[in-house]
Every structure is written in structure tokens, then in C-alpha cells.
Image 1 (cartoon, rainbow, N blue to C red):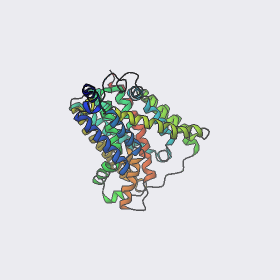
Image 2 (image 1 turned 45 degrees about the vertical axis):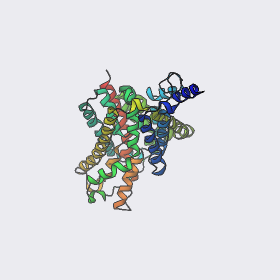
Image 3 (image 1 turned 90 degrees about the vertical axis):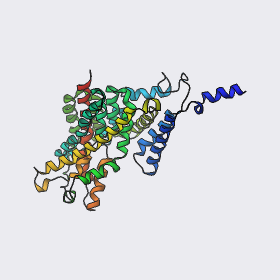
Length: 378
């Protein structure tokens, strides 16, 4: 009996647990707490947080239950992350939810989405300086786009060994948009700039909305064919929405499909944070670089808006706060812009204007990922 109890104990989680497992489970509980009490991206942090708990329960190798063990349930689900199957499906749902009207009515806002990608490329060089290979640095840099699916897609191609740390870092900073962005926005703008009122966007015709996903896809896909999967799904989803004849398909893409994929994607990203492979000096560097990347991206969008105003007439000026929405955290960064703007003028509604650079950032991050993949693939 004693031998049986000893064997049972040593093969149980209690007998195999390490301090690293406990640390990661505490982090998982923190994610769940922030998601529920602070409502920081709950649709992402709850699955990721609980996945961390699952991924850090120790077990005997060979039981066929771990995400690294061939043909286990978790292993099969992990293939969707490891080989980049899930991100394009998320982009399909995003396309079916996105209204590009503000961007179409004021095309110059596209430049703010492009400027916010500055964080990606500055972090690329910072990661190389810290000793990462160019391919790893490219995967880390994409965190600055504030686009979790794109970060997963690119890291699965360029740095699969760093996928867990990159994915968790990307989603963590997306959830912390309301915390990270406002201080940077306020630091880089004056009170007078925050009070700028923008002209109401013009009414966009149905024909323009239908043509945009077709023309937009052809233009961007020819520039970066390597981003074909992401851009194709994004614009396809938007065509389903705007065509007016495929509402059932659009509704499925923006509800049932994206919800299902988000659950699995978030959960399996959390599972992949197994302590022995996640708690490394590299992971700490990735989190630091991710924070810097996000901050630079926010600053890049705001500062470029200020530069644009030097060349625009008074009635066409943009409120520099909306430059922060150039990151791809849709629609959270646009909401943050609106909230910060309302702190200074309760009657100044920036949300509709901020959605322009926000959706441009989605396109920009996908293009940046394609450029990096093309340039850094051996």
C-alpha cells in the first residue's frame, strides 16, 4: 500500500510540480482576474489565462495528453497555431465586422495606420541588438502592430520556438491598450491639439464599399503576395459584409466562426506557455521589446498626425489623438482615443474618425508581416 501511494504521489501533479509551473499558473489567474474585474479584453484573456492553468499542470510524458505529444487533442489544436491556420480565419471574421467607410471618406487617414507600424521596424533592430536572429527579431517586432493573429501567423513562419512568448506578449499589450496608450497620447499633444474638431466624414456610397475589398485586395496582394492569406481573408470577409447578398455568410463569419476560432486560439496559446519552455531570459526580453514596440507604434501615429497638420488647411486638420488608433487593436484603440478626447471636450466625438486609422492599421500590420516574411525567410 505504501509503495502504491508513493507511486501515485510521484506520478501526480503534486509530485512533479516545479516553481515555474506555479508562477505561470499565478500569471494565468492574474489574466482571468484582469479579464473579469477590469474587463481587459475578456474574450482573449479568459481563454489564455485558463489555458495557462491547463498547460502548466505537470504530468508523466507519454500519456498522450500534452500539446507536444503527437495526435493528442491539444497537439491537434496546437497545429492551428503552429502552422498558422487560425489567424486567417480570425481575419475573415474581422473583415466581416469592419466598416471601412471612415477610411474611404478620408483616405489620408491611411497614412496614420502606416505611421503606427514604425514600432514594428524599430523593435526589429532592437531585437537584433539584443542578440536575436533577424528572423526572430522580425517575429518579435510585429508585436508593435498590436495584432495578435498577425503576430501568431508571422512567428509560426519565422520563429516557431518563440511563438508562445510572442503570442502572449501581443495579446497582453492588446488588453492593456487603455493603460499604455493614454499617457503617451497626452505627453505628445498639447491641450489645443486635443481640442481640434474634425469635419464630419462624407457619406460613402454602396458602390465604393463593394469595390474597396476587391481593389484593396488586388493592390495590397500584388505588393506583398506573402500576406495573401491574411489580406485575402480580410477583404473577402468585408466583401461578404458589403455585397448585400451574402448576409448569412457574413453573419456566420463575424459571429459563430470568429468566436469559435478565438476560443480555441486563445486557449491553445495559453496551453503553450509551459513553464520549462516559456520562463526563459528570451521571454523576458520579448516582453520588454513588446512594450517598447507598442509605445513606439502609438507615438509614431500621434507624431505623424502632428506632421500632417503642418501641410493641411485649418478646416482639414486632424486631431493628433487619432494617430494612436493606427495600431491594429480594433476597436479598443479607437475607443481609447475617444475617451481621452472626451476628457478635454465632452462634445468632441472622435470615435468615428479614429476608426479610419484603426482599420488602416489592420491592413498595415498584415502588409508589414508580409514584408518581413519575404525579407527574412531563408
